Image (tube, rainbow, N blue to C red):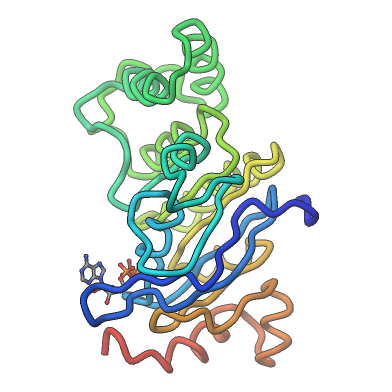
Length: 248
Ligand SMILES: Nc1ncnc2c1ncn2[C@@H]1O[C@H](COP(=O)(O)OP(=O)(O)OP(=O)(O)O)[C@@H](O)[C@H]1O
């Protein structure tokens, strides 16, 4: 991680839907190569904030920069420099494994030759060589998640945004997924990840915890545990999230 280089910065970032303020003046920075956990209870505003950071949703007020580009005025450049994996899934179920890789790499403007060489490498590193021609629909969920993540970083973006990437799989499969996250961070890719699993929060360099649209806490897991005088992130989260009015 390079603490001298900021790759995500927001200043009073806000999103309103009518009279309801979903994201309420949030301000924070993320460093290059950092694994940044973006936590909050259901409805806290994580997805809404992430969509603004990815250039997918207009800000109501405030400012933000991602990979050096202004998220309001340069949203196209933002999109070209990031990877995104949504909780609802980014792969086409009715396409084969290699067709998905080629499709997404093509969207990001990669050349056929480069795609062919890198997809062989990718399938080998995932141990998926024999699944090249398998329809994604028939893969187990944990495999789909690994493939979706690998596709999201195939074009080597500066930052990858992961919205609850490991929902619905067992702890061992989630740990395998986190191995991929660490490998990406080692290559200098910044990882911005939302999760409801507190064991995953422990794996992050820093985490922020959102409550009702506001960032209530932001620090490393060890500092947060000290600050709240508890033994694990589950307890930190519980202390903060129980204040939430949303979702009651
Ligand atoms: N398009 C919309 N119109 C009106 N309200 C919305 C819209 N999108 C989100 N909201 C509201 O904004 C709040 C924040 O939603 P958001 O999906 O960002 O939360 P979240 O923290 O990602 O929750 P989850 O963990 O359940 O995904 C919720 O109260 C939600 O109902």
